[in-house]
Length: 78
Ligand SMILES: [Zn+2]
View 1 (cartoon, rainbow, N blue to C red):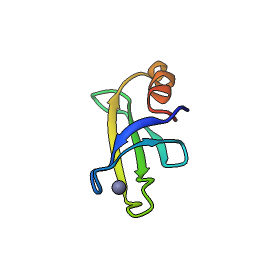
View 2 (view 1 turned 30 degrees about the vertical axis):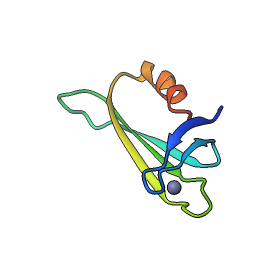
View 3 (view 1 turned 90 degrees about the vertical axis):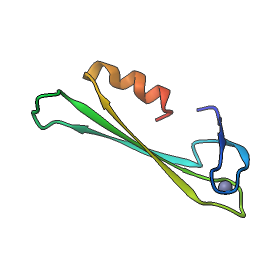
């Protein structure tokens, strides 16, 4: 994955995030419900600034079909 532009909310530094600075996972909620299948996507980003190194966590909930998963994964760099 090519690096993506990111601004740290703690130190305010504009930087480029690579796969070494982030970690994410995906959880598919399979319990039957009235809305349909949903997927929880979590992504931690650690600021590469050696004086900061704080993390942020982004969590997104998708209501979707399984066919959408590959597109979501590539969009989020997983
Ligand atoms: Zn920072």
